[in-house]
Image (cartoon, helix red, strand yellow):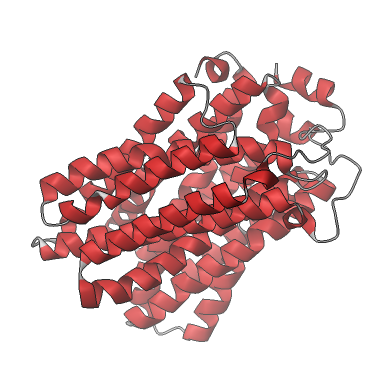
Length: 408
């Protein structure tokens, strides 16, 4: 934590990036309720949010690769402008709009969403050149992102109630545009230059270590998606789905606490063996939800503890990317990790929904635990890939000294 507070450049980057990412946590639920309002169909609304999630997963790595080749400013500003324009267009659609038009515009929003998270993680090794400080910064960032997930969805719903569902989307788009522009205007982002050496033709996933990390976070994403459904199902069984909100907030609070602890202990695991241990803790904590499913108090307590391994998992994986991603692919690599988690969560939610209807929330919690165990197993079986380092130019610029001076 001290490394972040002692570096004004790093502190500004993280703060502005969090504001830019807050609208992203609002969009999924915001698009869901707006599509329901426009079409009168939850089925159509579900398709809209599913298309958005897939498009977001596809667009992130593509935009990340462009940022690696052409710099951050050249990608962030146009993509933010396009996403905001499309959000405003969706906000202005009349009731009874064709579902096909709504799906098409939503796909465009996902494809155009600027990869601010990947960009800020790319910059951290340059503004904090000490590797220990970088690991701590990743832990801080992973913890702080939980705040956006705690605040974003309720904010979207509150704006929808106070104004309209369309106004909530438009407001989110404007915040996205302004905050992304502010991030792109930071000296560190403006000074960032591609290394001048293109990555391999297949992109960052050509690196075996990146394949391992993507597989790990896909499995972790399945865990997340399953837990969200299971908590909602458990709350319904206990008499009120409204209980799910506070329970999931406790889960996020646990992650925040775990991230703070990881920061103080050096920023998470440094090796494949350490990552496997963190994933083992993630698995064990979520398996304990199985016997707790019948009590709201027990569920809340276990969720608080289980969440404590989430931010350390992210921090450990992020710290490895800087070492194992191939030259010229670092932003794309971080974007792939976001995609892996999102697609895993979508798959986990889909599987969990079917299981919850037939076997109840305890069975879904068991699936979440199995996904965590799979992530740990992949880490152990492919530990050799994480032990090798890719030949990396400085991740932030071809002129790292200039960038460090710009952020001082």
